[in-house]
Length: 159
Length: 91
Ligand SMILES: [Zn+2]
View 1 (cartoon, rainbow over the protein chains, first blue to last red):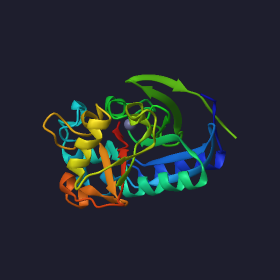
View 2 (view 1 turned 90 degrees about the horizontal axis):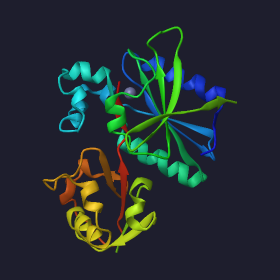
View 3 (view 1 turned 120 degrees about the horizontal axis):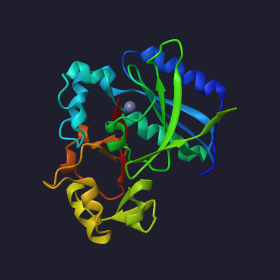
View 4 (view 1 turned 90 degrees about the vertical axis):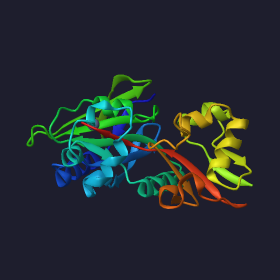
């Protein structure tokens, strides 16, 4: 697994995306070649757009969200718009790029994957990057590999 | 013949093929037929009651089957099906 390289402009744009959606979570994808990121796709968080979309989490093997009301869940969850995801994957195939990073924001908690994040991590080859806005003036970005529910730090550098 | 796009996490079940073919008149039938050729695939797409898992997106010619007829969505020769695990989480 080669070290991730992310253009500073894309890092800045992800932070801007997180701030725009705050207090809801933002989400998106980064694609590139051999870990060198060259493309950023903002994807709509269906839960932030319509709190009713959190119904998708019912019956998921993630107990963590089950005791929360729908409006609270909407601020602590994300579900990528399926149509936009498919369009992003198609664009990657046409440009010969690979999915490199899956990102989302945490608006109230540190940049560490939650139990929900780990339970729903179906892409072992992509790094999961989290933008924490817990300290609003100092966004914290960290990335992880999540494989078979095991979390390890994924290093990245800005270029 | 239906063309089915298989996502990376499921490719160990299809001998690493990113695309397989199936003959089926509906999504439900396609899943059964795929499972016969690639055992284990159904378990990844459906829960123990046979219902489609919520965290798998399935598209027919780029339409999300949630907005069609779910697993009763009909298929015809030449259709393209994409299976894409959902991306979701929380904090
Ligand atoms: Zn999270």
